[in-house]
Image: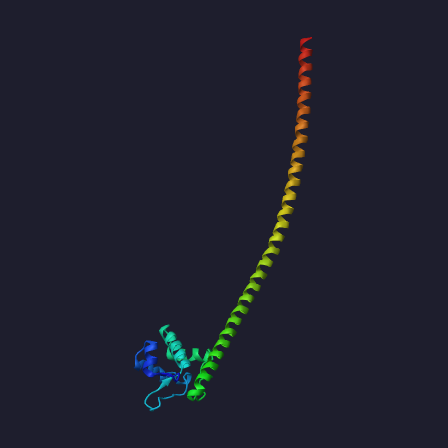
Length: 189
């Protein structure tokens, strides 16, 4: 078809669903589809490209296990239903479809920007945690340094006492040896 519209059967084939399923979706989600353009003979419903995109999204969400009500809420949350409520003539359909694509693109950009901002916030929070951990580690390092200095001081005192004790023992031993020699010499003479 050269007028930019898809027939009911073409849309069902593209979506890989039965005609009855597409008919039910057309009723359940009418608020998210363009007003029902019909063929020139008035025989059947026709879909603009944006309708097919919305129907693909509906299929994805239903396949993911969402209920019809949850899909409706999700489509409203995505901002759908606002731009499709305008009555479209065949000429306006392609312009409106372009507007919808532009709107969706802007919405996606906004969502991406929000994701980036959230990521930046997470990075800031993580950086704050790292800085706090760094301060805590510096504090611990200072405490450990003080303990090591105290231990080194205590070790130095112990070495000095040991050295003094050895000197005292050596002096005593020397005196004992002298006295022993004197006593031995005295006994000999």
